[in-house]
Image 1 (spheres, rainbow, N blue to C red):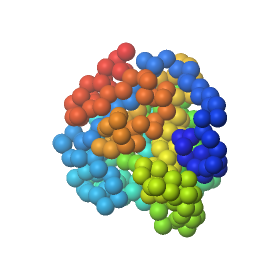
Image 2 (cartoon, rainbow, N blue to C red):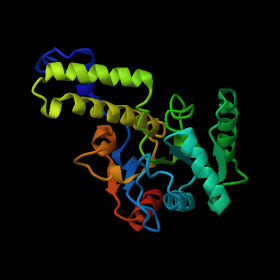
Image 3 (tube, rainbow, N blue to C red):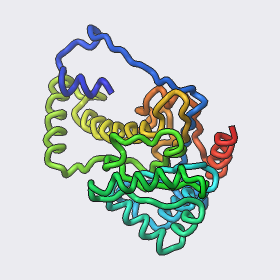
Length: 280
């Protein structure tokens, strides 16, 4: 968002004197479907805040959502977690409880490697599986937002017919560099808005944290739509995505918000939208 840029780089500039230009996306709006979902198939709330994300009930319901998506989505599904640690925690639980076996019955499973020199090999196998003429099931790739596969790698066409994001990848507030940046923003914001209010320091630092998070989300989503004829479905699994008037949803790019969007109160509504999209 430009407000963040102005505050960091040009805090004293009169914004009314600055002209901006924003370009849309080339895809047909009907080629993209974004679905938000606040709870899983058995009704467990998707609330992936750090203090609640280790709930086994919630992780299992996320797994059930992925299993059902794999039944409907053709070719490639890419599922993103907010961190490597959480990805390992979730997939370990799924493996021990049979969810991973259910996913494997529908699609071949791949995971993002930690070693950089293994990324190309995993991507090659993932692509070969999707393009295989002997096995039309496709594949699923588990990745990490901000990891090696969320930036600079394209999941265009059959490689990414569906992108699933579990939670919101907020940065680590204890990171020293980030702490200094937040302290600077707090100081500058108080100088620009000495009276406080909505532009006060606390508000500026919260906005910056959310902006970092949503920048990562937007980059991740953008991996799946790469040209005019491409099409894909995006599933945002967290209750915090489910309000258009506030929260992180408002910071999605206009080309996503102006395409087909459905805020699904239940898994049944999400599943119906998913089936209808791929039938079209």
